[in-house]
Length: 411
Image (cartoon, rainbow, N blue to C red; front, side, top):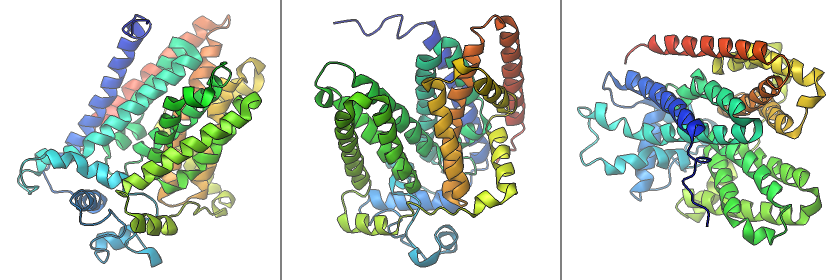
């Protein structure tokens, strides 16, 4: 048996990527600290998440299916219409994850100790941010080499939108949905590539089947409208492995079964609450009106710039290179670009809460695409010029991000 702790797995690239992820975590922790410094008790959506998750953990019902106090002003602002009391956008996953760390708090959740226990509900989402960054590094390094991996990870680790999402700083915890979406797409692609191996593919792939099912459950459980990932995963499985489509279909069905069981598990296997929640869930909820409003396209561009200001230069350069240079138009670059475009279109079609989730989930795929094209450019005779441009862009981006983070008001 080959040793696990080798230089290939734990060498200099892994050490440097770990430092970048620690920088990401430090920035997210800084945002959490800035918000909690006032020591106030949670309010608004955060209070609802914690309260409903606490309710479910203590056997008093299922989180937001329905709410304990559906007539409160906060609940009325979050859940409107005939489904008042039911969260039509999310399963109980975000609620139980938010409240789970509080089970370890030995004292009452009172106002005097809020500055301490309020850290706990942020921990799962900080972990999701780190895990998404690690997943991005792993995929980008496999597709683009070490250089492309470092470019993608630097984009990620200093992205204001992703840092904010991981810290859940005045935003919904969409980082879990983004991690689930990223894991679903690239796990499906990885599973499809293994179908070329001369083995009993379904049994041999059981670990990846479970991983694909977990990714689907996290994504759809975090945002019902990410059900779009189910046909997308099947599409990649069939495209990458056209000679083993029957096996790909069986693997897809098995992964969907795992995901469904896990989604049911988020309701603690309460069949009635599960059925009622799915009946009211906004799996579609799209409208095509946004495509006829020019301001929506401008807003999407603004959101991309806010997510990563370096993309204001890197994305146009990558798109022009992709269009003009056939060498860059291979699957490793095309797949993430295609997924990012689909997510942007879905974000435009979902003007409410789900739209922000799609836009955030698209950003890591853009990082993979841009870093892949830049890595291709570094293999040309213009390498010194391209390297200088990349280093200058990344240095300015990191400095800009840190300066703006330092300006965040306390409390």
